[in-house]
Image (cartoon, rainbow, N blue to C red):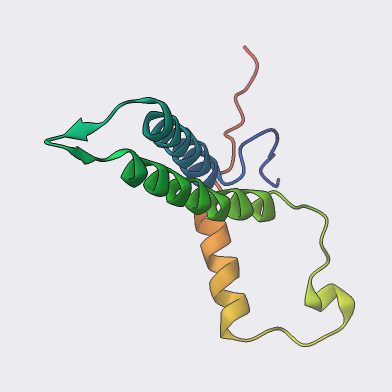
Length: 109
């Protein structure tokens, strides 16, 4: 019997990474814009604005990984009648299987 997947069970690590980077990026951006951050006459607000923008940009990679990991119903090359792909296809398939954690089925009591 195949394991059942539903909800956010696909690619949890990518989802946590994306949300965490978004939160940290927005906090850094807001602190850089609104908080007076001067130490010995040097303003550090710009540093926080730029680093917050970079964190939000990194979160985009997490969102892309999470979204692409949750796509279901794609036909494989074997089903389309083509030859099995190369090393990149095998690597992506193995990595996807390791990241995806099946939800354990609990028996009703």
